[in-house]
Length: 138
Image (cartoon, rainbow, N blue to C red; front, side, top):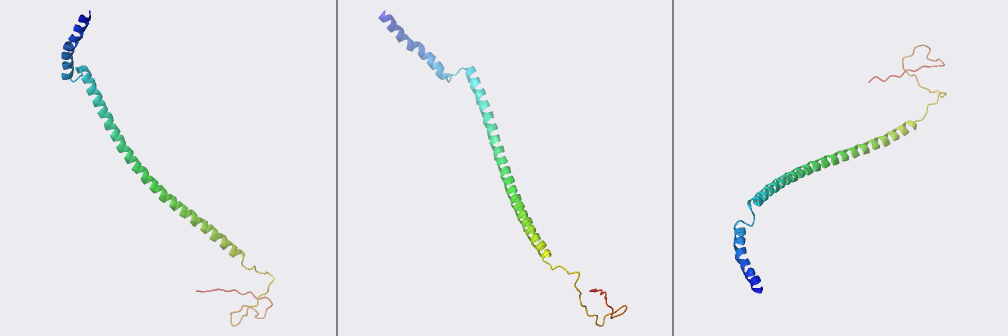
């Protein structure tokens, strides 16, 4: 019985060698598997191409976003400058309002003495009430 097992074991390399040789010559892959592998490689190539295109689009979009950010920053600076100008105008306007209010008020009971001199007079030059009209012709 030992001989029969040993003789069978010796035959295994003889039978396995041609099978191994056929496997190695065919590249270890039969034609159906080779077709599947080719299909998978084509699909992978398509996916890689699409990924590269997406990467290019992302880079372009990032450039667009950077340009928009620069424009936004310029607008923001302009708006801040305008806000400061408005505050300054409001502050200066308040000062002008205060200056207007600081003017002395006229007294309606005050009598002003205006010398008539050689001016043109209608009526009595010695009247108790004199209406003076002043004009500036320039």
